[in-house]
Amino acid sequence: MNIAVKNVVQRTTDTSHIEIRRAQLEHVPRLARLFGEYFYETQWGMFLTFDEQKCIRRLSQLVQQEFTPHLVAFDGERIVGIISWHYDMQYTTEPIAVMDETFVLPPYRSSNLGRKLVGLALHMAAKHKAPVFNFPIASGLPSTATLTNMLRKFGGEICGVIVRCIPQEEPYGRQK
Image 1 (spheres, one colour):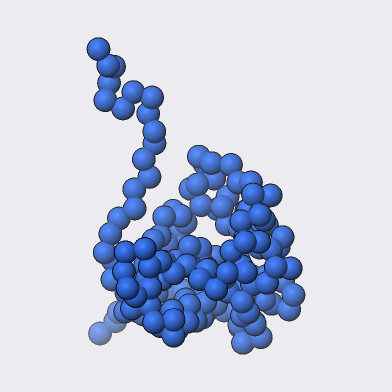
Image 2 (cartoon, rainbow, N blue to C red):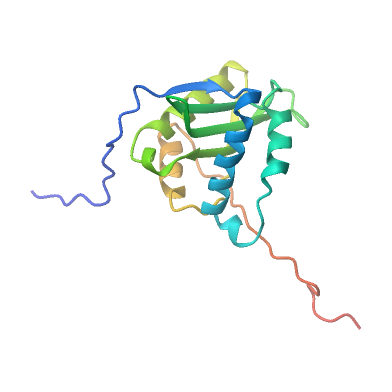
């Protein structure tokens, strides 16, 4: 019996030398540039304008807080990927881990780096006693299907839809 294999992604980039560390304040300017690159790869770049200085100010606050981990992948001193999330306990007694960003530079997407980042985030959330890790995926990147499949391999299941609504001046027609 012959079986045709389609869409097999060959893992070609070795990541054994890549170090993953928690973001520090001195990493923020480079992280902001990485976030800008990520932003303009997403569909958001078609509708919104990225503000690097605003990003720097916000990241400077976030990376110093315990409840908003940012893990950064370094190839030498070059930042090649990031994963960030926050813990939410507004309505629950246990923390819910909520994914904020996951991004790997294009040359590293044919590696296992994304899997390493997600696996480490899941492990850290479990150690933080978060029984749920919510992954809202709304970037519209072509790699969304790959990320969704990877999350399924980690035991995740699709349990919602995120919709982008475009505000209208007169949402229900002309008022009389």
